[in-house]
Image 1 (cartoon, rainbow, N blue to C red):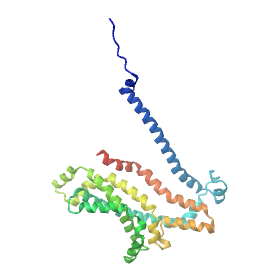
Image 2: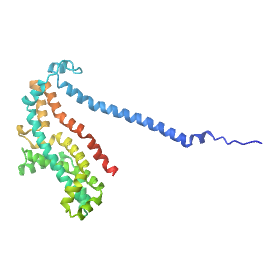
Image 3: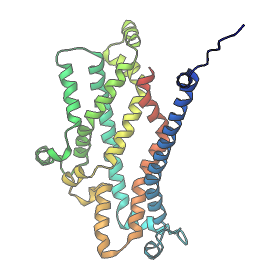
Image 4: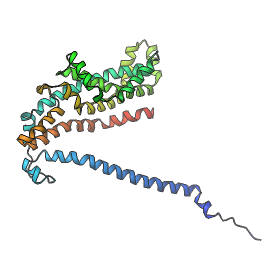
Length: 300
């Protein structure tokens, strides 16, 4: 009695589920190695200049030019004192904190209200308003800088911290409304309906129910606005000409120009470090909230 054994061909073995899974694992492994390698290179390119600038801020002027890649022989903390007082970085820092804090608070207040109405209420023209805000994201600041200057001048908002706060908020609104509108749409409608049944009005529902639920999104967009407004340069240069009201970006540019005459490079790097540290600290503290806000819409 003979048994005819069916031996699968080589091509059939390659198409078995186990072989396909093994092949996919190999492909994903190669892709992971490439992506991780790219991220490591990108991290080095970003982190190394920051660390170099911070280390250089503790060096003397002689060490900056004679041994730029070495650690300082001793820490020169007086560089920061000269930058803070002698170069007026302290005043510029305070001005920047005031303007950015006011701009971010005003942006969050206005954008949250606009986004909530667009996301939760249907009325004629709501889509047009939403698309106008989206169009504002593609509107470059350089295109409107000249008419903006004359408008601000006519309203008395030049050389004014209040004027900068209002203009910062206006330029931050499009992306903030776009981001928060998508976030408010992910929130459960049943909670708002329950609040209305319990006697809450529109303002009460927004302030007591929906706004607390949107906290991850507010934190995320707040961080983005802090980063963008802290690093803003063109708007304060055009709208702020009073040296006593300069922001950090203007102060650092002024300090850089003055180095051609005084050669106080250590104070320049100290001022640069002072301007970077608040942003690094803010992101390090709130990075979990930023990640939660970015992924909350996909998880709900």
